[in-house]
Amino acid sequence: MSATLLEWIFILAFFLIVVGFMFGEAAWLSKKGWATFGKSFAFSALSNFIGFAVGLFVFFIVIGLFLMFSLDGTTQRVFDSKVGSIAGTVFIVFATILTPLLLIICKRIFLSALKMQTGKTAWLFALASSGLILVFALGLPTLIGYLIFR
Image 1 (tube, rainbow, N blue to C red):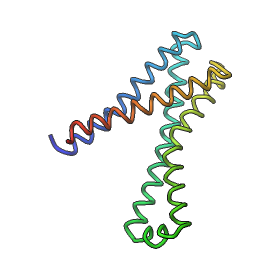
Image 2 (image 1 turned 120 degrees about the horizontal axis):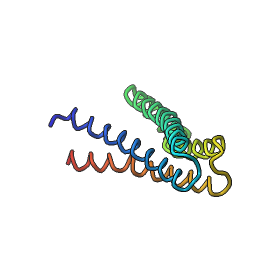
Image 3 (image 1 turned 90 degrees about the vertical axis):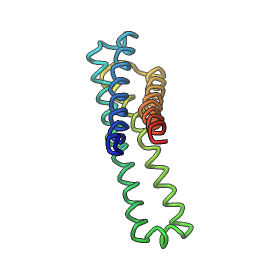
């Protein structure tokens, strides 16, 4: 197999896992009686799309900026200082934490906006669902990539 095909398999695995998780999440919500399957699927699709789109967009912008800074030598001049090193670390941590936080917040807001659930149960569901989708959607393709590329 060519390297390009293997990369596309990795990307396809990510999207298939996300779509499968959305159907599973919608089925679980409708089984629990929080909403109908259609409303649950709309909740899952919207919250996942907004959380992943905005979070990963910001993540790739920050990583792209660091790549550009490293190519022209700016990282050696700026990030070698104590303030620059701290700022660089803060930006990387912000970019990494943003996607999970956006998923949790989007799920919680949409649970409330669609009048599906409120209170502690909604926060626990948002936290658990966001954690699971991140582990499965990012972990399984990484495992598949590792097994294919080793």
